[in-house]
Image 1 (cartoon, rainbow, N blue to C red):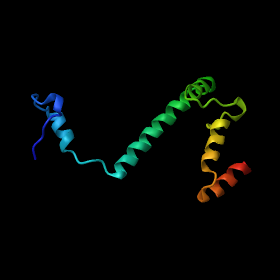
Image 2 (spheres, rainbow, N blue to C red):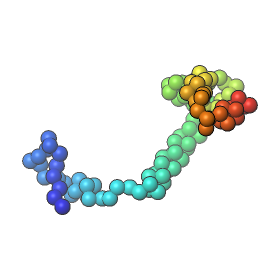
Image 3 (cartoon, rainbow, N blue to C red):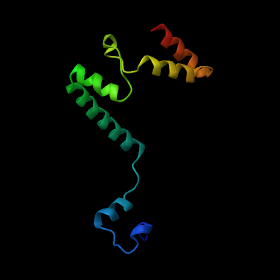
Length: 103
């Protein structure tokens, strides 16, 4: 198996690290899930360390501004309406919509 650099770097030899990256087999779905879980756990820890004001600022920056009374709920009302509009008419979503409207 011959290893070559990308077009822009034709003359350059690959470093040992780059060779190893290319030779490594792609991650299995189990590995990907494991990494995803670790990343989610790290994100949760960061959020847990924030105060309520910091957390609401953090959400507002991402367009998820929410009322203080619903501090625990992440999705804003207009986002929820967009979701329900996009789900309408799809048979698999009717049960989910009914469950959402009961809340």
